[in-house]
Length: 272
Image (cartoon, rainbow, N blue to C red; front, side, top):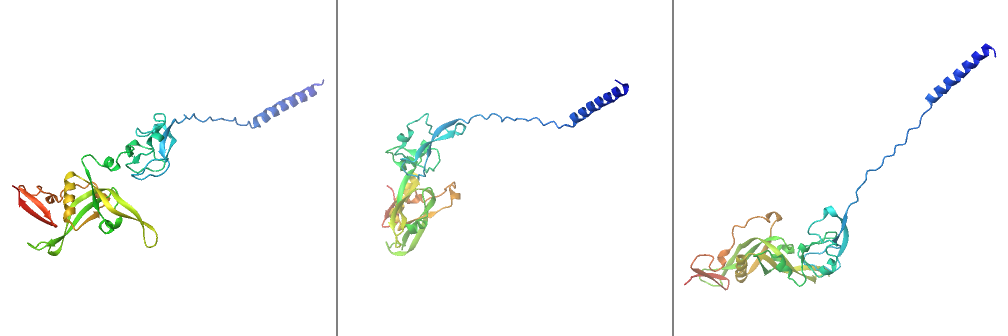
């Protein structure tokens, strides 16, 4: 083979090899697919908790307003009722009375319940306190807007009489005899008004009183022509009471004297 042809063939082979290298470098290599695995999520531990299926007010009776519901274990409270501890809780709690309102979706708490056959009022009354009922009407109870757990002042209104002349009216004496008293209950009845609509009218208020306050209001009920409840602001709940009409109770005014109430008049005689 002539030398010239060998030279041409060598040049052609070299050119082809160079072209192949250039083409290889210019070729786009597809990116590798990166697979990102999601971090392992631990399963949330759940427990069955007894919850309310409906709203029930204070004094209401539990019947079918309960069911078991899954609840995160790390959100449990010691007061919750759990199925693994009390599987028959629904049947046991039927007939219980609520000492505090409970709402739909709220876990049932034994601390808010009164057992079957037990008195609700005695259960919600704090230790050492007394529950005393007094007659009220719409005009003596802030127009009917006083509700349980509200705070009120008790105002006594009675006729004044001329000195030495019994039952001779010359006007009225009004005095606040008890301050910042908690209302435990309002007796509510349902009646039809002129338009046929049902309205609630309270006739009796039950107040939370100390034994001394219970004596004061008992005397005041005998003396007064009218007892009025004055509604207080919620901001006054913690206000400390510094005075009350303890002079109405015999033996609490001056030592050695007895106070007598007759026909609305108060007389003081020396004790023997």
